[in-house]
Length: 272
Image 1: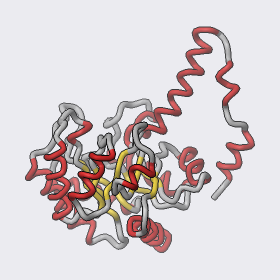
Image 2: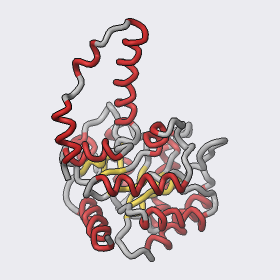
Image 3: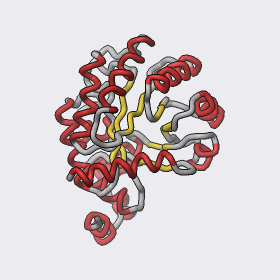
Image 4: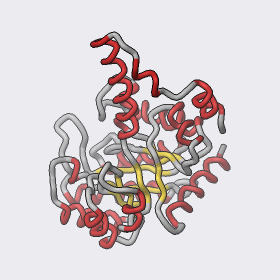
């Protein structure tokens, strides 16, 4: 187990060091992880919102213990590195938040993130100095881990109602100086915004994909890692909702015609 965990972590770090960008899609359960592995992706990332939906909850309403169990589940589902969405690491306190990274590593994750947003209820962006202190505490813990765990520091301004790219970049630069391995500002919408962030820092940048940019455009703008957050989970729920509404409102089942067959799904589930 220890060797397997080390090999996954080493593979994950190597993806950040090679030329070009790579995509880490975000499964929400064992089945979706196996499907994505079967499609040839090289690494996966958890999604806090997608996982919460599987439990019948809203994003941010999952405990640290439940998240660690979920990480173990996904790590066991596919032989790929898994990076963990750890939200604010379940604590405002820097030292306690940093311990969440250690727990994620013990659960088998090859990387994990720490946010500068406090989470719900009454969510707020942490003051600059507090946010940097949290990243520094996380770095101290991560550097003592037995595997090359990739720490991602997230600046949440752009998806939390603070449309301030200058402050976002200032935070990412400070997180880099504190020792973060990967920098992440979800909410970048244009190639120019991606370029501004990537040119302002020297560490790899994770970009949250949306409908406006292709992987090639993100890579061309300097992005290294591309994730999709809860988008795949929402696409899945959207298909489910459409079919369910058709049944409830019209008593028809035309939406079933576009569903993949059992053979295709079974093949993906039975893969490594």
